[in-house]
Image (cartoon, rainbow, N blue to C red):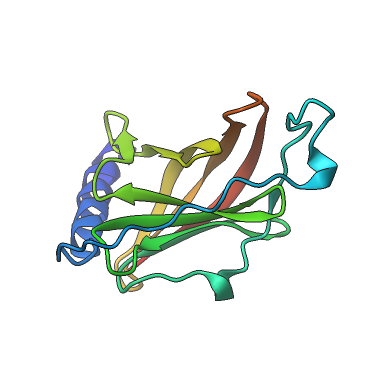
Length: 175
């Protein structure tokens, strides 16, 4: 019985993703990645990151174009936000890492892979400082709200120090 429910859910999710894709207009503008900067409390004497922390994304300060948006939260608040990149063909994601609002730009269609039945999505993000892997399990799909619930884990790795931090989340995507 459960396998029969996955096929319509996967089809509905794929339709939602395709229908919510960012505008396909070409743009010469590029999204700027946040500058390389360190917070004084998180750097040791050799200028290496001593710890990583994931903070709350100030969603009122993020800029998305029209289309689908994704938000993941933990008990403290929204820790990840993703939407259509303004004036560009692709997606922009935001995370607050070590008290700095980091952004990750990804061209359309190259960030995610799924398992065999489409119930798990793995997204790979990267900017100058961090690599992020998001593993999310697809939950309930709501046709009325054009949304899907998700839960999973975000793992952030500092490229320079190799330090990692992971956090569990719940949330979803709405169009």
